[in-house]
Image (cartoon, rainbow, N blue to C red):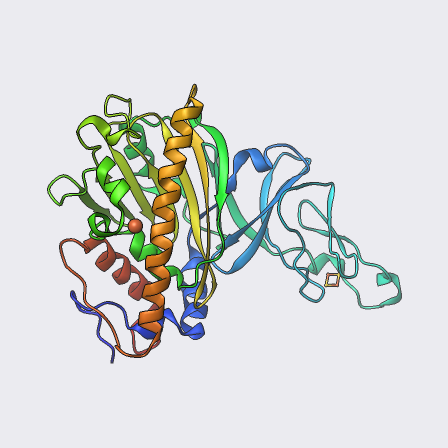
Length: 358
Ligand code: FES
Ligand SMILES: [Fe+2]
């Protein structure tokens, strides 16, 4: 049996094996809330947008009745993906054979269905998933009877409010999307969960935020893992030490939603870590800022985030090459500096069952 003790990482096979990703989808992503989209993308009747819940493609739709609904974004006929990106429509029509669904998911028409005696549109509606908004953010959960989103968020709303972020006052600025990462989604999550690498790998971030172990906090609250970092004296330029937001907050809501707040002026970025295969990962971040954010500050803030993102890309892709090489069965964790990773890995093991089953 592959043991997962306090010091061992997960077995490296778990980062390359498509069978493990299938289990993660079934036992983890299929039962979890994940950030999907912004509320402004689906606020008016007829608006649609697409998202992911792990590997599951999802379409979110605001129907005429005002209800926000989520569906598996796959045609019930022969599996064509239905929608991509944002749209405004009265119906969802499959591009393959033109089966047409209402925005409540029901199958409205299928060409030549009248020639098929046993055809029953009643049982061929889109498969629903759960969708709920929290402030300007929409989350999805494939589970049709999930715990309420607010319960799943735990202390996240309170931590943001206490840290100077009023989510309802935020204004959307831009979505930052990058090429897929050549690594397993857990490599991205684990890299996010420690700042042990920051002093080594992120010189500009380290100038701006105090990443020393005595100043930089690591906090575990059930499925919410939080890092808290104060700006360095003087704020290092980008982060205004006198601003309303005293400290940076970097959260991972298990399994795969990232929420970042930088110190200084009100700001927040949020996005999912989306597996696209055992060794491919897609990410985006929706950036929000407080009222009155000026352009110069915004440009500096985004430039630093971009630089850190590029540094992290090299790290995670190089880690994937190492762990996929077969040279080692697993690695070790530093129990203090990497305690959020140890917690993350224990939640993965708990969701998947014993390592034997995998
Ligand atoms: S696969 Fe959608 S209509 Fe045929
Ligand atoms: Fe990093």
